[in-house]
Image (cartoon, rainbow, N blue to C red):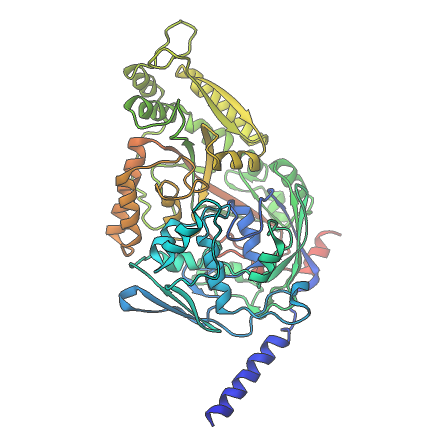
Length: 593
């Protein structure tokens, strides 16, 4: 009887793998959007938000964040249920859903390729691999039992990461069961398993691609890459072997409106996604007004063309366009290279210089002109919408008089009467800010020049494409640079990681190393959510203000403008995915008559 049942179960699994699910996506439904350029489509090697967005459409993790729910929860995706946690939080057993398939690829030679536990073992090992562009993950390396030895071996000169070397704390127990054993408790591990670094890739695909793992990605997600013309456009098409989904239930009446018309809709519904690479907001705005784009995420002066006193102008409202204003769980900041001979180091005068630059930048004008009022002055590392953000915390951001006094006190004075200060040793003081060539960045650069001139600091602007600046930032070649970091999870741990001394250079761009901060970060991971963990985050923010490896700018506020024929769209802070979007073709045709 047991053998008969086992055979029956295996037959059902085989059928689930062999027979593609009913295709829900309609090829006639095309979602058209403007999109910034991307850098990669390899989940263990991407660095930027927009590459991550596309990776999350192509690949899948064991877990994901809820869509229409705030605060977001973590729910199973390819996992069958939530992890079974034992041994005081140090052993995690995760069972997977059988029958999930990778998109077809010639490497599979016509056979269906099922997602199995070994794929997550391989993908998590790639996350640990210090020889990849992301540089590995020091937290996971120390967290997973047995990982440190394998990672350290890969760091030796001429060595490579041995993917066949067993890691005691990371193994496939059977075809559909993953076990993770930890050296210590980590309250962010579940969030990590729901993040983009934990998306599953197929080993045979990665190894066949060689150094180019981005041009032809293969995942189990709702979409697959059809076309990528770098700097021009990206096209995704529905994965025909993806399993059908239903639209999630809204968790509150406030979010229920976004589910209108989606009851009973089989997802994914959109058959094709066309992303036009547009870096400037004005062309995006004009195309949206013409109906060429289905929704637009706009800020600054571009959003104000559609708004009046914060509300949609009557003519746009009459067309059925919807406006969604939302706080983005992100921090905009300026980082300083702590290894730089001019602005770096922890000598008192260098710290004073960095703090003076921060106090001297005209943040109120940046908010008013560049962001068009779509922002909130930043006071701490963790932004609104993230656990541990202290809405009552106030800090002085812009005080040019205090900046000048600080520079005077530490010997940065104008010795030759040309209106610009020299360094304490009398050498010229010149700082270089780096910007991208788009309009908003140019406006920001001009504001930087004016702000620094007002406090007597000579600044020069270097302009280059974002991908090139990011490459230089990762290599430690930039003196200072404005960046933004969007928290991928509700705890905000990833933002805190950006200043952890053990983080790789593509994460800790400032190369900040501080024992008190590192201790705080590691304590944060081991502390459950609540007041104690929030207090740790507050102390870490205070340390950042004291040493100024970065200076806080703003927390952005987003504006989404959505065409009337788009259904199911909501700019979810953590659980967004295009698989939930639909297009009402009848309404779209009527609007274009």
